Structure formats: C-alpha cells, structure tokens
Amino acid sequence: MASVKVKIDKDLFDKIKKLAEMSGYSSADEFVAHCLEKEVAKLEEADSEEEIKKKLKGLGYLS
Image (tube, rainbow, N blue to C red; front, side, top):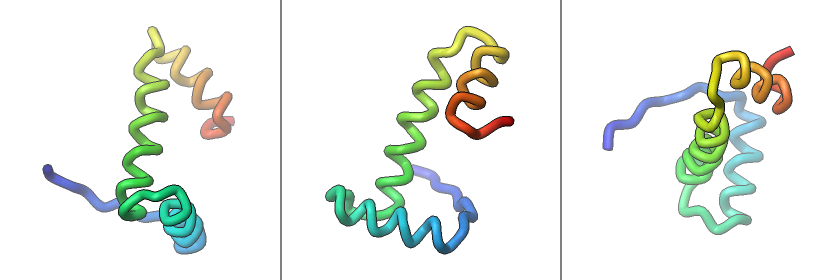
C-alpha cells in the first residue's frame, strides 16, 4: 500500500499517540487512518456538495 505524509501540530500528535495506545491501536498511524476512514465514510453518504459543506460545518471544520 502506498502512503503519504501529513503534517500536524506536535501537541495534537502527542494526544493522538496517547489515545492510540489507550485504545489498543498498534500505532498512531493506524488510529489516524481509522478516524479518517470513518469521517470520509460519513461525507461519502452525502448526495451533493452542499450537503457535504453542511456536514463539515456541523463537525466544526467550516465556518
């Protein structure tokens, strides 16, 4: 499987690493991939771009 790198704030990564360990994930990468897969699946259920924007606003990603 090909992979890419994403830059995130170190404080956020430290939280992710701690939560991944507490949750039983084998790595922070596995935890982040699982979280992103869940969020992408929710957005893929949208029927239109407008619905996606509404969902992102609901999640606090857009204002």
